[in-house]
Image 1 (cartoon, one colour):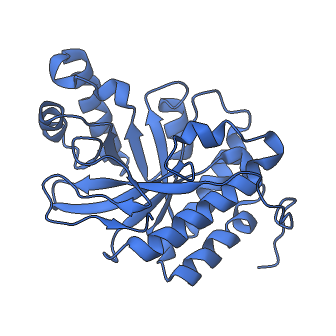
Image 2 (image 1 turned 135 degrees about the horizontal axis):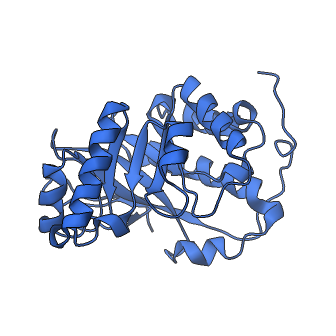
Length: 256
């Protein structure tokens, strides 16, 4: 494309290793696995924190690129359903120029024979954005390229209504603190039902994450939510697609 950015030529290797885990996203309306979120893990399955705590500011770009590539290449080996989406977390501050910085991801998708149109990039902002216009530019560019975009932790920190109005992503993931024990809280039920209704008016898909039991699931389904993620269905599988509660599917793994 001829577009270059400041970090694209930096081929320096990261001084630490990492791998991926995959957690299913379930569509209860269609009774299928809608996709998987790729989650960073240590080389032996250690927590994401064990990896992210080693990051320095000057490694953000390299890590963001490497994590995307690993997620896509691993998904290419694991995924069997051609409709399944791959959700990848990204760091807005690690994206210099959206169309330039996405090239390594597109190259990885071609190598892995993974449909680029099945990629979804999600971001979270628990602290106020230093440059909302930059993030808006990223979201606009990714949507123009045919990717889905997702706002994680909606309803927590600064990921609220103002950000939703400005960015209008394809999908919002409601913060799990709003969903925890929702069957016991009338206030939470009213708030989440309102969010779901608002999202429908904006043509934005809603995903409820962190669902842990049948009681929470029942209330959220009644609010009109169809996409779910959480331990009630499956814990993340280390370098694998875990078996999912209620689905006749064996685990598929690359873990040694």
